[in-house]
Length: 105
Image (cartoon, rainbow, N blue to C red; front, side, top):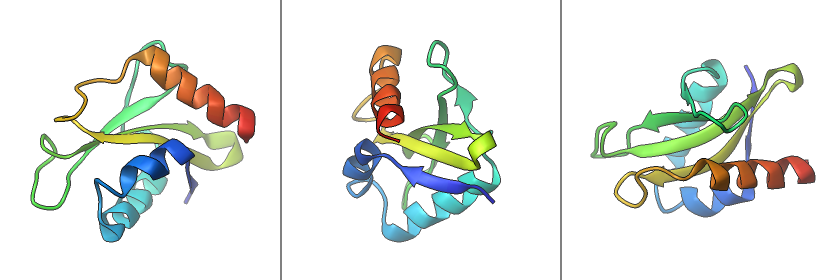
């Protein structure tokens, strides 16, 4: 099982979207299935995965942006959002968030 790391950006978004139980369920799933999401073009390996929310299916659920660092044994959760708020986050913004975290880590 891989270690799941939450960036500060992810942490600032997640509490408005998931219950603690949903958050834990996602962490367990992604640690067991690190390649489950679709690769986002032009982002250096970021992936997007749809995940359901309580009372909603996948379509009404959350989108999680993450990347894997398999040699280090971890997965970095970059952002989580609902489709009603953002359809897609531009690749440039995602790259900026990823780079900001990588510089700190």
